Image (cartoon, rainbow, N blue to C red; front, side):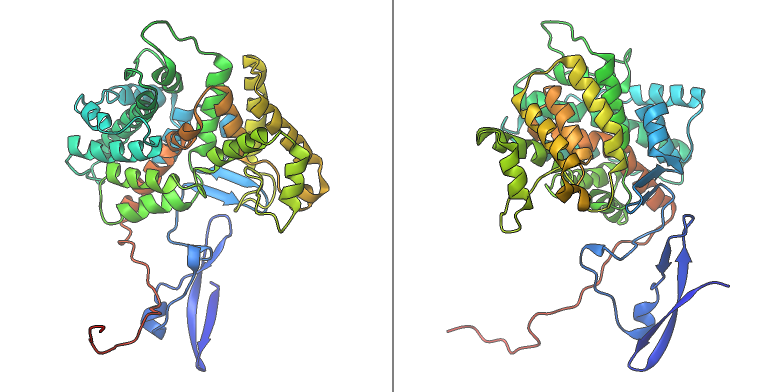
Length: 425
């Protein structure tokens, strides 16, 4: 027998069905609430509201579980490549060897960016934040691909996916090249996706670029860990914009803008800014740990704890090992990274942080890796966007295929009641 919830308003009772997900999550279906009762719910931040059903990502913050399409994040990070995981998220199943090879081949067909895009990027000052430039360039791709995607045409949808995966990586790295005053690089179809990212970023025309396999593997893992994370701010934005039947590039551009915020994708940038502040003030980690514990002190320890995970962030466990390998391989001597190691060690041993489950999260370790690779702090969120791209595409595709209605939240008006028009004297 299906479960129901009873709501009583002014002595009148209303019955609503309870929807149960495949992992036994329960949700009261209030789809008919306003029609039946004339009332709506208020839920700032949508912390208690499910905007959709989805078969893409499952997470349990209490138990520290994250799965893509039913596969544990630990298994995917250990055994799969980023493009395999991208295919899984977008199309629902892991690809066969032949499907994966074809997917990579088809992405390569779309990596060349129209030369007129250079005119757009040239219009930005070198001081422009890379995320602002990336949002604009992603939106501009619509001008070169004006035809809307027919989501019911499997071939057309597949091509749109490959085109987005191919071009987004290139223009993301162009934002860095612009800020450095370097010539813009092009994709090398003889190399892999993650390898291309590093050479697109750092290869100069004056010398060959050598890439460490340890670095490639660490970045591959980082991109996998960032690939999707349920209905977060940027993902919900992509679905909301896409629900108006806006195109894929326009929807992804909106997601980039949402990700830019320091409370979302900008968190790993905030970690490094915090570490630099500690360094500039003498590098006394004990002093800053004490400040973090003081309720009256505005200082906050960035990169520790997580809004969703009430235990150890499962992604942090995976990337902690990769961070140690990268630092060991590169032999980086950096006082900022030394401060990070001291904070990590202290927080893992300090009873105050352990009692509150304030463990280092994925943003903490990803920031350390990016710093070690020489990636500037204001590029950190661009790195996040590259990893999150397949998740955004998958969520947009699912929303359109499910024929979800246009997003249109309600509100409760709290302004002035009707008043007579009278100009002030």
